[in-house]
Length: 145
Length: 145
DNA sequence: TAAAACCTTAGACCTAACTCTAAGTCAAGT
DNA sequence: ACTTGACTTAGAGTTAGGTCTAAGGTTTTA
Image 1 (cartoon, rainbow over the protein chains, first blue to last red):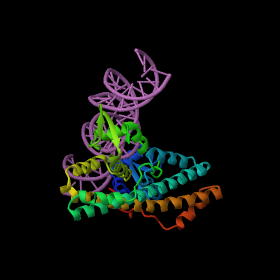
Image 2 (image 1 turned 90 degrees about the vertical axis):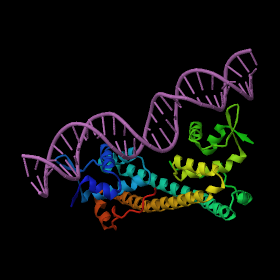
Image 3 (image 1 turned 45 degrees about the horizontal axis):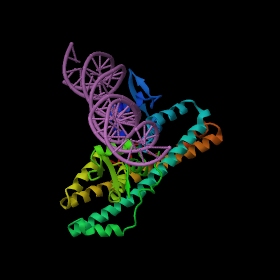
Image 4 (image 1 turned 180 degrees about the vertical axis):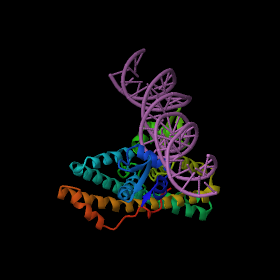
């Protein structure tokens, strides 16, 4: 089964422009061409899945490209690739923790607006907000890199 | 206690340029000025905390600005602001779920490289990868907006 | 009183990641 | 044979979010 660029764009939920851009950036070093037309095959799918994953964990394209280059260099870069993956795992964990932390603030704000709407005015809940433990701007979780 | 722009930049872990840029975009409509110099006070801190939160959950500046404008319009926009906050809560949830999903793929890749490094080559684990359940590129979780 | 160390603005510049246009190729359908 | 529609390229344009420079004002320290 072979697929065109527009099939892949649909699968990955991006535009064909984006796929071409990724290709230009070297993210598809081994995709077959017939008359210059990109043909994606089953053998390319594991990489498409991983690429989709790396994009969605907010890995920059240049870093993904670096990973691609390491893969092309073969077994001697196994360790380096492993470390790059480890780094991404750390990164995801930080992102998740950070989001969970900020979710608490948003949930508090949600409750605040529920109270305010019920009371009909924000002023009526101004003292309620002050009774809540302070979420300190100086004590933020580590920023994801 | 009053604070200059550089104090705030340090607190929020961004550059002074960034704070000025945010101000230019209308994100600090009520900050005091003395001789043209921005003076941040304790009364501004709740908003700085919320702003920091909204930035870190990847809310675009224009959307944050919209929220600011609603706040300035007073109590009659309480419901609209509540809905905006609800939307952000959904958004965070989606982001967290998505990251958790992709974390599984990264963890699998990590195990894969551990095996490959142990074996000394990637080829040696090619069949092991095929025994794993497929992570299907066509069945991705909803993208966070 | 003068230099250092802050602050100000307008506006140019930068980067990442697309997004689109123009001009053209190729294969299939009528 | 020709239109349709999907593909190609190079390269220009866009957007978001900063980042920096130049020219200047103010405040603190020696």
